[in-house]
Length: 346
Image (cartoon, rainbow, N blue to C red):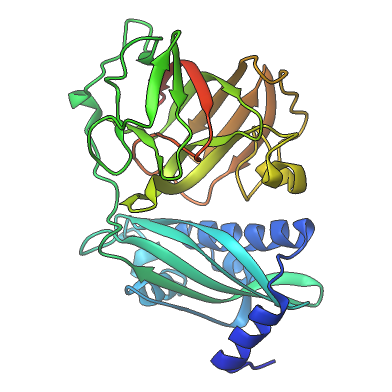
């Protein structure tokens, strides 16, 4: 099947529909398997996730990726380049029942000549009942540079004797700055020992001053009616513009599951889930007005999400964890947080 660019836009505009949950999961899985295969120099695994006419492009990554998968190529041998990439499809739209286009984010680690981050554009095609990646384009954006890494030894917030770093204990907010840089934003306050987001049209997220790679984060949170927020990690890049400050990254979703429109409609947007990627299993929330206990545990490629003492999901990422800050999202609504602490596991 061939579509002109104009025809593609018309088709998307006419349908403007998200694929079903099962199809989205299959497409996300195909992208994840391809990225992991390239990072591991596994040509056979990569071939199972992509079409025969697959074509990557952009920021030199098409060349770099193809070279890694050539049998006997130096980049997959003893002199292998340390390059890894992490990527995520974000918004998926059906063109036909068997063609979906999507956009998302990417970030490189160890790219010769300097790392890149930015937008990712994809085409998924279903052939013989199986979703595969057919087109993939990387578009590096100079305004969305890779995260600036803070060497742990020079941490602003050193760990205690037990290895834990207290980020918020009911008083000081010194461990946080505005996401993307800047002083602590006025859209947050401390009230009764609780860190609260103040409802605002332009959300201003919080990021830790320090950066983390493999880590365990524990925190308590409380949703308000129709409330929505998230903890972002494995960041692709930080954002700070007229619409607010935030980050593109993997997200532990926090929401009023019975009132937030996205959570009501989509399992992948419910509390404890990996937002837009994996739905939580066995998650039980406390009633509105009560605090939930959550944890994110990252050990290399393996990540676990915990909610109220239950492991509600785990997954293997496509790359080793990129170093970066942790971000508390401000999603325009009021949410409360307390007892936030983290420890490094690397």
